[in-house]
Image (cartoon, rainbow, N blue to C red; front, side, top):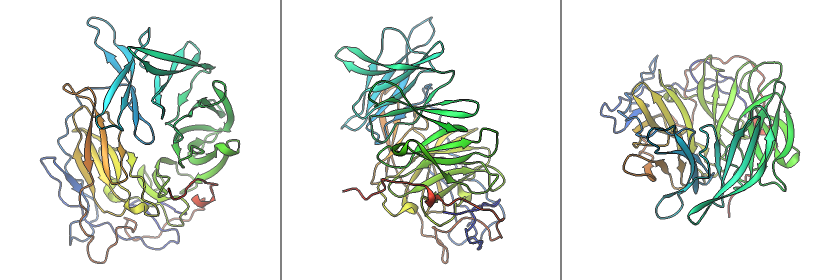
Length: 427
């Protein structure tokens, strides 16, 4: 996959013109569904006018740290606060079970309240990994319900100044963490190994992020900044080959290119890059020769837009994957739904008490959003992708969204060079 980026959108790898973005339709002032995208017969405008934001309510409950879901969405975990009148907030771990007929939460309190900076990762067997900071050490334990109480299995500790857990591994049993130093980053397996936390590799540069590229939990994408400074580029780390590192994403030589989400089934990638001149959301396809594209409909002035879930199971059809995005603006927080093949960003109000930034798509295109409001301690709201209008005559939703212009010359790294494995059609 090769690409160079330009100011108004995506470019083509061969330097050819990109198709102009149709004019966005008007937003819904009442906030039921507001859309940005093409009017049926409208010509391409010089500037994109954003749709009106839905009148989304700020969630009734603020939870720190964030809610974390397993890759398949079967379990979730968060820290929640126990009501203690006249005292400091008493945090404890809570596991959500979401794959049954009714969602339910199981509290996992221990002998002492948790610190707000503790991190949780749910595992596929229902246990919850917790990272605690104790002086200069980071301890790791597995929490699980035992009748009326909470069982705890201590895994070990890592003595580092800073250490952060990565998103849950697709294998459901392993958990990984990064310890970033001045010139290198330590990669640790803190659960799922043979005997406690295990140091796997020292990766050159300062690494962050963490996106899984396969279903086996072998290929991990990290955003890497060179030790001496320079642009951030995404690299692929092969855990099956001694944490071998391979360049994965480079849109322009001096651009910061970060991978936000990936779908192992279709190869769809959600990317943030400043190659067009400022930070933009774009999409590409793993191993493809097509360019990265930066749709105009994903640009919302004065709003933060962050993808958090991609529809799985769309083998060989990355353009048809539904994508859920968290939108934060002055009006509050709401949901964006979008497909690469479409030209519209559908904007919908978030459910009250939504655990912001969390959710999972089913294979048939239903978005599950966990929430907890004043009336419900554990619930899931369901959203479906709105119907897409047919593109105007002579346009194709799979084409880049950008005006025709010549792209700058650069030497990108094809995504197909990464030694990716595990992308097979499920039985």
